[in-house]
Length: 400
Image (cartoon, rainbow, N blue to C red; front, side, top):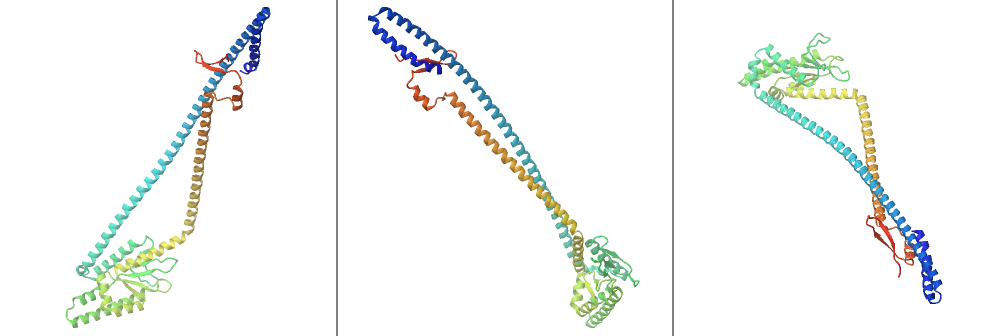
């Protein structure tokens, strides 16, 4: 194409020469013939150069077609890579979503299971409360059961042992242990921090109490009350003298009353005996008060075990915090990887868009610059036509 453009001034000069030769044909026939022969040769050379230009244009079109094929192949490759990357990212996200969903499902199931167990325990507690209320209403039937001292002692001992065994772990209590003075209290509870044990006595003067309850006449009732007061004071003094040993037991002891109603009537009708028991460091307790005291002791023992294991708990918490920090770092790294992958995908899409635009420009033959367009207006016009084979050809259009 550049050679053709270089030869265009020569063609213009040849045309001018032919015009001069035609004007001088009248003067010199031989000169005209010579000039016409030279013009024919130049015309033949111009046609030959046009053929060469057409060949070069065909070669350019072929190269352009190859370039378009390569660009199309590159665009397909980039599109396939982008699809593979999107698929890999989608698989990773789906896997993570599945694992998170499975974890949440497991936690939900565990929560429901814990709630179900809690409801079962609450139902058991409600049933136990109902049983306690029923037992309080049936206290009147104790007279048939506690008809003698052996039965009375066995019943009080049984209730006390059941309450202690239900509220304290094994090793925190003992029954019928011998003290240094040779006495055997019904129960001793080991206190935390190396403190002396707490003594519980389950014996109670039930015969005098039954006589007081059965007395109808005022004189008989006063006599029965006096006898019950005397027996209760004697028993309180025995507990204080036998079971309160300095340095070996606690400074106070529990006197267990196996009935809530008896406990209430003692505090109602024999308040002075209760005060005297307190001065003697003997506390009269009912089943509910004993249960409450056992719960307090259990809380103290648990607090002691917690303090003893505090360093282990702190170590476990430190390890837990390290695991949590490591999980946070890994999560942030995973987030950074996702952001980097997203940025790379955006850059790949931008590159493919640029390649598509450049391919479109090449396909539309938008190759000439504005300065070259201005120069082309001063040169002979050429028309690009499509041959039968589908290739583009350049045809020079004569100004004539």
